Length: 472
Image: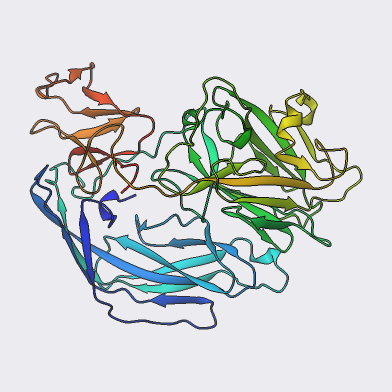
């Protein structure tokens, strides 16, 4: 991804003049023609750098959901290395609503390109027909001035080395308040279940965050975050989605198996790396949770500060005095129904045991039939919001100095080139094996500078080391 194209970076301010609007009625997609921008970077006094100019384009188009239920759309284009301002693999568009998508690129003026918009789950709603469409994009030039001296290496000034936030074995998923509104660098996860097609009574009520019901099923949105930030509460139990090979200390891996719609018309789907959870188009969704029982040392009194509003699974009353809700999934009424709760493993009931703590977990996620909280033909999942958006007081808590947009680490010695390898910051040596920058050392091939903290998303821009901030 071309990190230098992000408007939120390097203290950029925008002044935008709209050139024109083209509407494509009947397709369900409205394309707003590209328009020129004048984008001027602030001069950062704390780390002044020479400036370089890069020609970019900015284009805006809209996705229109004509159906009476919310749906997820995937956006793609034939532009090389486009930079969308938001995740585009699964964009939730509310019922009968329109959502704007912005893309930046370094394509030349006059080039002709097209965008493709596809509804991922429209076919699940009776009478909702929105097929895949291609929409032309007209490119218009703009100029951007960015802090930093362009390296002389091949491919400059476009060469950018990027790593996403490093996934950890103890990652977990929390429930964002709105679709895709995850912490900076966090992967957005979706698990969508086709609960039951006949007489479906799935529902959501109260605060459920990015969990929504459609005509025959339920779609869950999660944000991948560092599970080591979470601990037990002194007096209450809660659960989060497990997204690593093991649960954080103090929590227990627990499975809930949902018996979904049987047969060829099952529409289960997911987005992102949902492991160790899994889905089968045959008829099964297995969700793996990390269950935190109360009073397990160490404990915490507040949930981690993620700078976005989010929630977890917990029984009422509210954990932090915020809103609560209920998700009801009308699972398939097969005989026998395969809904089941057990100790975590590999999503296989053959290796799935029952232990006493599951009775506490079943107060949060449970079968709805009387006397069968670990089984049942349908499932309730209880949710609670645990954090609101918080002010950004320290954008760079792990490493670096905030330059107005990112966390600046530094730059290597003149004549050398910065890069990232195996989650470490490096630069090329001088005279074969010399590492002149203080604090660095020769590792036999290159100059090791320092390790990249696992909670961060590092990248190289203009031959300088950076990591993304935790907030702006």
